[in-house]
Image (cartoon, rainbow over all chains, first blue to last red; front, side, top):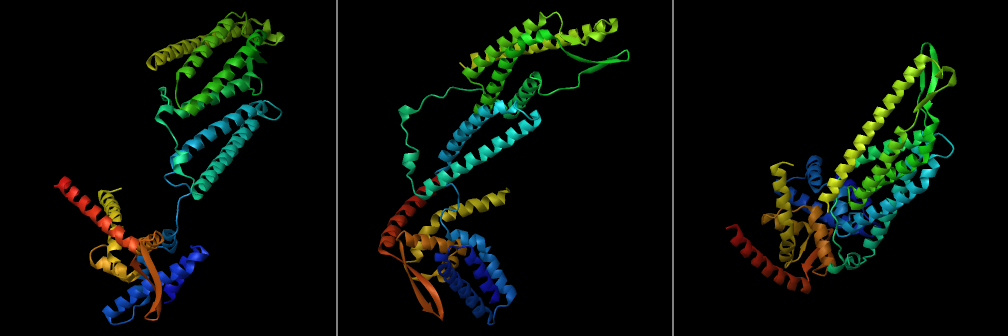
Length: 317
Length: 109
């Protein structure tokens, strides 16, 4: 009988105080009822193994106890659709606001990579708290029995038509956004790549010519808008008409900046000490041609993307 | 999930729906937990403790059953019986069940 007592003791630990005795006595009567029945059939007392089989059939004490308790879910199925939608909206607002106000901190003192990692954990923590608050609010709404009619109050005439959107891959857009941020960070000299070249035994650093400063802020604004657009695409998970038009406008602005860059006399500059060297002159010409080729490729991609956006706009009309 | 597991799950769902009717019908006579379960099982309705006891407690809370603790064979037992409300509900549910059963027979045939 020790097995049965242990089982019932364990079961009690999973129940609230006011239910423990009642449930225990009810199950105890049932278990002993079954044991007595079996003993009568066999004409002898049940051994420990046979008692164990009876208890095993009843199930884990935690599972049995939980079946006596009401509401085993944090958020019940009736409240879940409203909970999910509220959570999505809250996360969008909280993450959007946090990201917007944290961007200047990325360029503040400290290492940029450390700042990006810090921002990531800051956003993760904000998302966690937002989620926890929404869960707690819905838990208490359900617990206090707030009417579902109030939560799902609606009228057919208030439902607006949903504008169709073309779905996208969130991971791809996230990667695109990261690349845009990395470019912005490099463009603002917060991230430096090795830029030394050795030619004829002379090593010198290579950098963009001073003419690039004329497009510094145009590029910052265009890339900043592109980051915001990518973030918007991640949230709505698709292209819609405003996003497509914005992307076309950003692309047109980018083409205009690329055209401006192609008009520069020099794209690359090196220190004066080697600038007059004939071999270095040749190398610089090659580098200029290389950069121009890259810019042309980017321009072709932008034209293709804009064309594809126009087609999407037509399809999405 | 295998076909057999699907079948077992669907079978449980199907039985769960009629369980309340069976319990109410069985409790036209007074029973305590184990004797109720034994009676249901002897008539072919397998039901485990974790399902039956919470169900009868819920039905009692809803006023369909009344219960009384009594000592029998030196052991405290809780005896359940159909209340007046439960009796009326059982009549209505039985009619509903007969209608559903007849409709389903027509559909399945």
